[in-house]
Every structure is written in structure tokens, then in C-alpha cells.
Image (cartoon, rainbow, N blue to C red; front, side, top):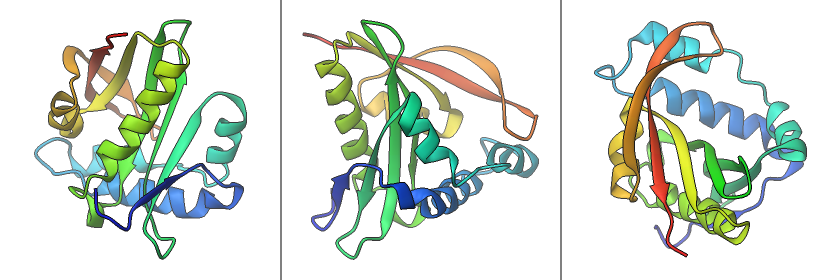
Length: 165
């Protein structure tokens, strides 16, 4: 992780910055994984107000931020049941990918879920993200089609990490 990068909780006024980062991260996915139309459908309808609403009800968030308060990524997660957690989203600004921000945010989410009793964590990963999750100890399970906010179905890979107590 780059030294000036810090992790912090979601703030109520983060919505616009997260929505912008979220859209840019999706649209930057390499064309070998998804067509432009699929990416546009995936990025469709991202609502800046949704992050705070989701955080108030079902998901927990961590934000990666540079010293100058520039948000470089976010991760959200939730417990599915008493022993299973789920990473709901992990996005890094395309200009800051490869800096360790994703690893740091993922670890923060995993550590919190472990503290909450998780023995396994799952994620519905984009095809572009599969190598990253494999490098973090997840194994690929089945492939399926997932409907995007724009209504298109795109292939994804379910992944799982079994945690040792």
C-alpha cells in the first residue's frame, strides 16, 4: 500500500465522489472481459445517495483515501448469516489500481467479518477481478450471468474464501 493511503469509514457526504469513482472503475474494465455496452449497462443508474442508505441498513464500508483527502477506492460487505460474509463491492480508482488500496480495503472487510463470526466469505466477482481475488486466497466456484443495473446480463464468477479460526 502506498504510504500516504489511509482507510476510514464512510462519511455521509462521500456519495458523489464514490459514484464518480464507481462509474470510472467500471468503465475502465478491459474490453477483453466485457463489451462497451455491458460496461455501460453495469455503470448505469449509480446513485450518489445510495451509499449512505445502504450503509444505514445492510452494508459496512471502508474508504481508501490519500493524504489530500482524494478517495481512491471503497469496499462494502455484510454478513449473510452467522458464519458467512459477503463482499458486496470493491472498486479502486483506475489511476490508483495496483497501489495496494484494494488489498488493504479487502483485508479491513475480511477482518471485520471475522470479528463478527464469519468462517467463509463469498463474492460475485467480475471476470476482470478474478485474478485479484485468487491472489488474496479466494477460489473460483461457478460462473453465472448477473443482471446489471441497466438490465443486461454479464458473466461473473462466484468466489469463496474459507477462513481459519
